[in-house]
Length: 341
Ligand SMILES: *Cc1c(COP(=O)(O)O)cnc(C)c1O
Image 1 (cartoon, helix red, strand yellow):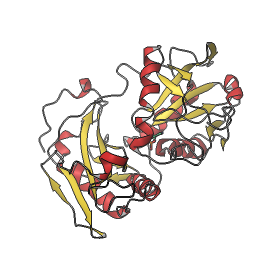
Image 2 (cartoon, protein in one colour):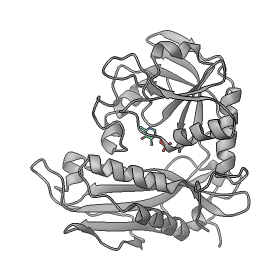
Image 3 (spheres, protein in one colour):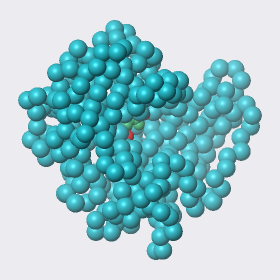
Image 4 (cartoon, protein in one colour):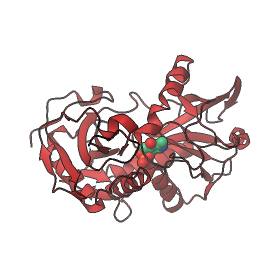
């Protein structure tokens, strides 16, 4: 297969139109059989449910070229089940999980020429999503839906290595208690945009959201979970019903326990404890791990001991092991790597 002539290592994190995408429609209580299409545009009625009441949920995962030249994806079954959870919460029909995984196979295969080569640092980002499509004006769920999956090649998240970032404690909340923080819905992102734009304008890379009820516990950022490393080498990850269950975080927990022999605590993390950690990072599909160097709480600075120059040593081991598993350099746990080609 002839690869597209793209400057892989200089791609940004943006949309590049690829050849094929997958579409399936839900009508009269059933999904149609679905198909690949060349058509990247969606034409919907002006009153479609997604436009009026934001009935839409999404996922994000990647395909890579491994060291031995195969194209693979990482744990797509977990994206399938998380999309199903998100759909149920917004009263949308579930797209069958095995059909989701099959659609990943079809979309990546059909766009194999866009999967960046091994070693380029670039990957193929896959975006599955669902939306209410028929006219809805009274507040209720739509009756008809579209499931779609497209992909776009994206560049290395960090050009020239992962530099520690500076984050601030946000005065805004990301998710209400008993709200929708634990699902991957566009609505959670719409309301985070003002907080991130103002954080950037004030010179911060990201927001740290605290639990909205007591404002004493660490939740997550707009699009990534936190990981912390204690001075005695334990991995600590915040637990809360309003945190999105990151697949990267769950995988790092497994890697810490089973590959690195670390103790792991998934528990409530009080903001007051953060100053005592040795290392801190953000984790998610896009960057795998972004190290955190500094956390600013209304002018008060917490300097993470691993500093502003490089990833802490434990964070680096976690990062190297997980990316090694993804790229086929390290043997993966059973079922983690789905080979496409
Ligand atoms: C997608 C997302 C993450 C990261 O999840 P991964 O499965 O690791 O990509 C974390 N937090 C939020 C709010 C997200 O939407």
